[in-house]
Each structure stands twice: as structure tokens, then as C-alpha cells.
Image (tube, rainbow, N blue to C red; front, side, top):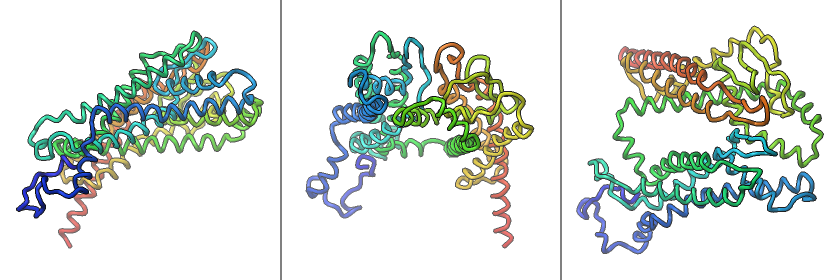
Length: 428
């Protein structure tokens, strides 16, 4: 990035001074020095509008697929799409007087991905503003990224507030405060990080962190992503085994082709939620699918359930198979393997350092998993269906213990492997 390149004189580089630069060099420099206020605000608004438009289109498409537009009006379909977009930010929505507060994390992830993409572009466009890399390394304050992030969030929030105003009615009543909090988290954390990366500041700031912190963060990222991947595989196996049950559920719904497509789309939107549910199950605490229910490796009590295809992956209510509790060994195994792989690029010869890096990475991953468990649940209907989600606190406690222990073993194994390879090299 232009502002992060060290300043050099003509005698060092052989280049002409800025006053004599070519037109192409000037244009290339101006690309990274665009107006911050206008660009960052417009970037935030565009990031919000891009996913909002998709939700509006899905709402209109669903309206035609269900009854070919025989009932209601296009504005009603647009309102449904807008409510779905607001729900992705945590607003919740009332359906026939019943609160649905469960966040469709499939749409939330789409909003997050779009925010990151626009944030990177904003960061690249303003990278030429502020001090260069040498000045940043010397501790000079740089307000380029914080200012751009704040303006990016303002643009996003203006779009969200406008959408809430138009979509709100006496029967829907989405919670604006919760939606604002969700949007601030998306734009402040993910958008701000993307702007810092695009502007080149993130690389400079990360170099200021101690090496042990960067290694622990790498271990945390590897453990969390690996455990979620294993959880997704277990969920997929459960769905494949009970494919006939899911097909039977769809037949009992008696939906048309268009309505069936909407049910499939809704299932896809909550698949990320189901992955975290699966992770809580593998850790032991399990999750609920209604008040007074429990799904865990050691006990399953479900009772009657609504007709939804994704619920076909649930184990049968009653005593669990003898092999089910052994699934809880996947947690420490995944933690150990993930840390061992992460530390290939960050070897150490000290036993205490290797073990500590792995343990800290595993504990951090467990805390993040507990946070996800607290966010993916919510109400999905009246009565006992107002309590659906993982056992968040228990999941956090189990995850930090299990993944932390696995990370410790993985760190010690990685250290042993590196010491052994070094001794073999010396012997040769």
C-alpha cells in the first residue's frame, strides 16, 4: 500500500522525485488516496444494500412460488424479505403474534462475507492516507482505520434503520436495538478488520505483537475451524442415515414444488446453527429442541417435534447406543491434531512453551465455541418451542476443558516431533 512503503530518496532508488512522477504513477497513487468520508460511508451502505436486495428478491420469488401471487401484494413479499434481512442481524420477528428470535446464521454469514469484501475494498482505497510503515512502527498514531470503520458502520446502520422503518408493522415488530447491536458487531469487528487488512495496517500492527500471541491465535483458529468441520461432518452423517425420515417429513407437509423449495432454502439458512448444535452434542452437554427436552450422547428426550426436515438428523428419543458416548473423544482428538498441524509453521524446542501455546489456543477456541452456542439458539415458535438451542454455559465449560487439554497434548507432541527431527539432523 502506498502509505506503508518506506520513504526513500532518489539516490537509493534511482527514481525521480514526486514532482516529476509520470501520469501513470500519479493515478496509481490517487487510487489509494480517495476521499475517506464519502468512500467509507458509501461502502458501508453498499455492503448492507447488497445482501438486502438479495433478501428482497427471495421474498418476491417465494411469494410467486407459493401461490403465484394470488394472495397479498408485492409490498408484502418485500416486507418479508426485509424482515428476514433484519432477523439475520438479530432483530427477531413476530409471526402471527409468536416471537421467532432464532437468527438464521446462513444469512448472517452472507452479510458478514459481504461486509468483509466491501471492507477490503474501502481499506485499499484509503491506504494512501495517514502515516507510512516507518512512522507506524515508531508508534505514531493513525486514525485512518478507526475513522473509516466508524463511517463504514454509519453507512451500514443508516440502511438498517431505514429498512426497519419501512418493514415494521403492528404485527411484526422487529427489535431495532438488537439489530443495531448485531450490525455494529459485524461492521466494527469484521468490517474494521477487513479495512485494516486492505489498508495494510493489520500487517504492521500484527508485527508488534509477541510471537507467542500470534502462535496461540493461529492454534485457536485451527482448532475452532477443525472442530466445526468435524461437527458438520457428523451432522451430515446423521442426515444421510435418516434421509428417509427427512423425505417422510416433506411428504407429510404436503407442500407444492415452490413451497418445498422455500423449505429447503430455510433449511440451508439454519445449517450453520445446526453445526454448532452438533458441536455442543459432541462435547457432551448437548442441546434442547424445546422446553423439557435434551439431546446429548448420554441421554435423549425429545417428545413430539415440529415437521422440519433438519430434525431428521436427531437421534431417537430414549436410551442412547453404547457407542454414542465415545463421540465425546472427538473433541480432545481434534484439538490435539489441529494444534500439532498449526505448530508445524511455528516450531519450538521448549516443552513449556509448546504446551502453553497449544493449551491457550484450545482454551480460546473453546471460549469462542461457547459464544457461538449462546448466539445460535432462540425461540422458534409458541409454548415449549420458545427454548431451542445448545446448553451455552455448559458448552463453554466443556469446550475450554476438552479443547484446552487436546491443545496441550498437541503442543507437546509438536515440540517432541521438532526436537526429534533436530536431533536426527544433528546425528546425520
